[in-house]
Amino acid sequence: MTLEMLVHEFIRVKQAPPSNADELLDFTQRCYILGNLSIAQYQNLFRELNLQGASKPEYA
Image (tube, rainbow, N blue to C red; front, side, top):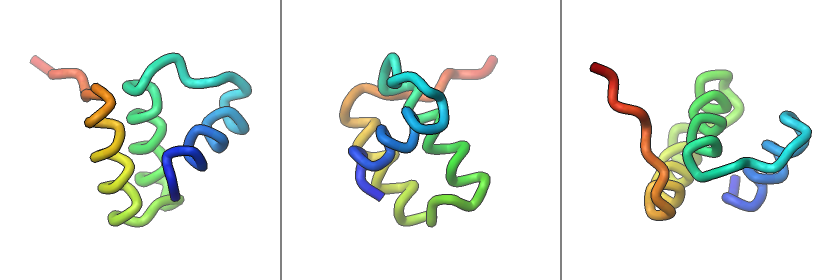
C-alpha cells in the first residue's frame, strides 16, 4: 500500500481527511493490528510518515 492509498482509505473509513501525519500513523498501526497491512507495508508506511514528522506519543 502506498501513502496515497493509505490517505484514500483513511478518508473512506473516517469520512474526513487526516489532520496530520500523527493521525495517519495511528491509522496505519490500526490497519496493521487488524491484519489489513503486512509487516513490510507497515514498515514502509511508518518510514514515510516518520520522514514527514509523525511520531508516537511517549508514555510516562
